Image 1 (cartoon, one colour):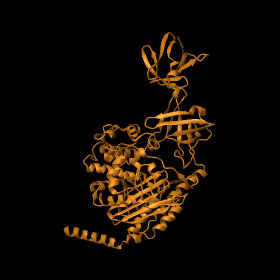
Image 2: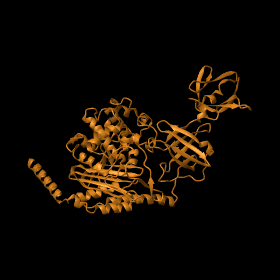
Image 3: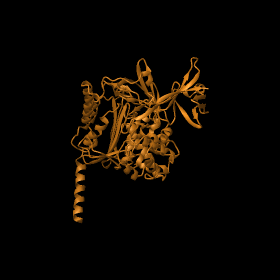
Image 4: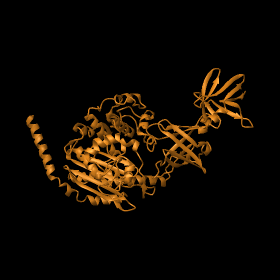
Length: 592
């Protein structure tokens, strides 16, 4: 048995040695990569890219391609700053790793041991969730991204809103990418370090690594003299400028801006087991844990890949027999990726300035093929072809009239009746306006027109440049025929979120409410209407008190009673002299 094992190890060592000997010199292997990148930039309509490659501990490619500013023809350089979006997640995990190294954090203790105010919509997950769960996308919470995207709330305020977002799975049962949990992980890092998350990352990671051109804010990006402008494809698939959106309250999930050169320093540290130029940045066990499977995901579209999983801050998979750790980043105006084959000492950075650019997905494997002497997979072109087929499929559906729209229907109310403010806990307000025969919809500062779709459903126009592209809402009507709310599919893994209609602001003002106070005779029974100090009307009958909830005009609902409302009615002079009580049938009570 021992002889067999020895023979096996000898043959494996010989095979690995022969493989290493047959691999080309990295720089020679990449001799034709410039032409491929420039060809794909043109074919995929990407203004510019910065690419870095590490092999054998050395930076063998560090170059800019195309333009960071297409209009002024300013070129991309190795030092051009790009938003790197979700690549930031690696830094968030690593920032927690520095706290593990200091003995301040255990990956597998409940989060509530460190933050007793941590609270999710699911009670069991609240009690059992660990820091490892926060960064492995297995908490049970789907994305709910529109709850934070563009939100004016601070990080701490968003953290306190987590209890409002419904789960779609039990904890640790399914991979569901979630930015809120990474925000929470960064918030945890800040609280344990006694500094802000940004300051903790800067001091524990960026400064030791010498990543001097990596920073967190769009303000810093705007001031940089070598920063990339963002672009996107419009409805005609032509390039158009795209404005970056601030994610500063969500920085732990996607707030960093960086350069190809700076990210080579990050990759050198990761590929060296947490050490950089003689300094220990992370424990090797934590570096390895980041790139080990924690949560299974499933198969890939491409046969070259095995099943994928999520580690901590990295997707992990197998490419043609080689273990790969990678993560992409997407935000309006930018798409990026970091890819590593740790056992081969290979690291690749691809930064682009076009929304959703798939070059970041295919190019790393073109480079890996060449570095490892493998047959070329042509994944850059194949990813681009998938993108083109997706656009063609949309165009075909439009041309052939494929739609779920029900023809010949009408709204149940006038457009004026839909206008108002609607709100939901954790999601904030939605404003619907009616102007010149058209509804508009505003959420978190983003506005779009709403076209009637069918029945009481309205939809925003198809517009790739809009943050509310094709958003759909359904207006709801209560038992009294009032527009009471809108259902919005903000997160498609759960039921539509219902935003409740808010009363006009004047209905909470003391001068307005005082008009209704007094005693009303209801067939020999006194009804008292009293204004509480917090500007809430109370209905008091036979010693029983209930609140009146404003609806519109002079109409109020009686709180906690379904289908029961009170309407205050004026006489010819405008003085309120009676009220109507509606509960299926209606009755009048006259003011004394």
